[in-house]
View 1 (cartoon, rainbow, N blue to C red):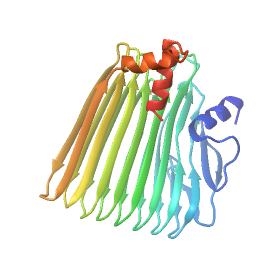
View 2: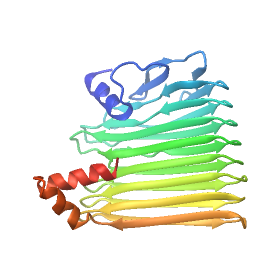
View 3: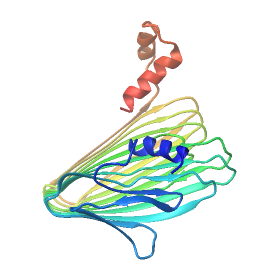
View 4: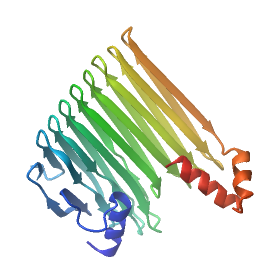
Length: 305
């Protein structure tokens, strides 16, 4: 990998060197490195357009890194990755995609991920998106995520996109069996004329299923965001969705939280708040010696933390 690709790898996966444990690194549509372990097996799909990650039952305190980097202008790809997380396991999966585009053609990565989480298993999934480059070509990312959770499993998903992506459409669906718990934390910032659409559809199908989908976002300049989240309670369950956004400059934000109760004992809550930075917050920080711009950045950084 060249210097640019290594720097992007640091941005999306916090990797400064080859990670411990299992990993699959993809660069400009090709494999740039792979390692399986005794408990985690990574294999290519026969069609060559993705990987299968199989985690043995009972695997604990192990991780998988599967970052993607694009530095070739005009490259467009769709990759399908499937994760089979065995019963009673407890693992971390770190994904993410970074695009460096200094050319005139659009660069695009669409990653379709499916998670099959076994009984009593726990997985933490971190996905970061990042874009850079001074070319006129766009940086496009469209992730699709499907989560299938068996009884008493837990999935924590952290979705992060802070800068540099011109357009993204994230679609996430989840099916939860009895006692399963899904926690989603989305952090997003758009600027310039960027657009970002986030769609979540969660079905709570079993007794005691629980979902918490929370998005925090900042829309700057002329950017546009849409947050569309629906939780369907099909059994005695608990669901919560929340959108908390800061709007700045000429940004636009559309929040569409929705609930669908199909069982008398489904407890569902949604919250949405959109507003500008409070003036008293700016004044307080400016009295400490910060400029208005510095104060705004401090507030935004704290909000998206």
